[in-house]
Image 1 (cartoon, rainbow, N blue to C red):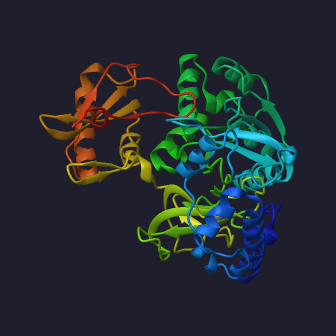
Image 2 (image 1 turned 60 degrees about the vertical axis):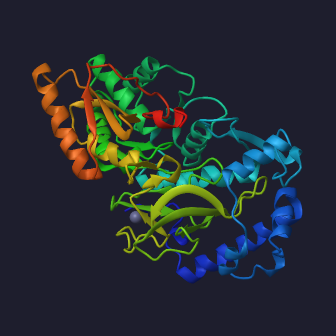
Length: 441
Ligand SMILES: [Zn+2]
């Protein structure tokens, strides 16, 4: 049987071997950042940390955190690349923009070697999903300065796959390609997978029967790690769906494997993960905290202790696949920036998605945080499937209102509209609005 690992020596390394490799790379990165990045030279001086004194992995905790806001500020004050840049611009071969919801996006630069690290670790993830060189791959991400398309494309090519470039194609053209060519693997955001499935259904195309797809992978949003969303994608495509969490500034850092155990492995030879509680202390296995990454491979913009704002749960069990890489339970569980407080209760939109997606007669949904009669309130709007009888819509709304109240511990208003009433998302979805922040109090 062919190996299930692309790089078994790294993926199954003994803890001491991995720790040695991490420490060597960490020291290299800290020294490089301190010497060549004006941003970090100043930060480390302020924190009174000498690079040479970082001698163990635990010493990393003496370094200050880095936040995205600081990086944005750095680029604003020192346009266009900021003082983070730690190599001559002539050594840089790639620029990627983060997808910003507010303000100017962050521009992130890579040397050719940095870029290889990004897509090669990504290729390891694809391999763990079961993608092999005889697969034909479609990376259905947007063509442009965002990393999703390029990294998916290069990673598949790194495995020797035939890659069909569809960055600039319409959904209709992509559907045609899926029907015409022996494409076996599809990568896209989970929102786009559902969008594509709806477009196919409208055309009378059964993706499960009419295409050769056997694997889909999803990144850009955590949808494929939400069981109900994953199940919906798998049934629409007749393929196995995998979650691939990543960050432009860090790496395509994690992957589910073909054991499908609910664990997300981390490429910890590329990125050193810390999972920290609110006080900044490492959590124990089984506990949740904020994920903080130190890049062990990128030289153009070498991030140290970067706060991802993602909440993960450190696994307290081994994956049956045999990998020894650190793993998280269920991917990214929440974004700290998405957290909402409603009448004293903490609500994460992901939890709403978990409950709503379990209903096959909901095609799309929207969450509105609002104020009603002086009280905070959550409205969940549902876009019902055309297959649901009109007489049953009210029943669907009542059921979901009950389930949401039970699941979130707070009363939720549910509205069921007409089929097609809500916007669809062909990239990353924006299903949440908070009207409360728009009202001056
Ligand atoms: Zn595994």
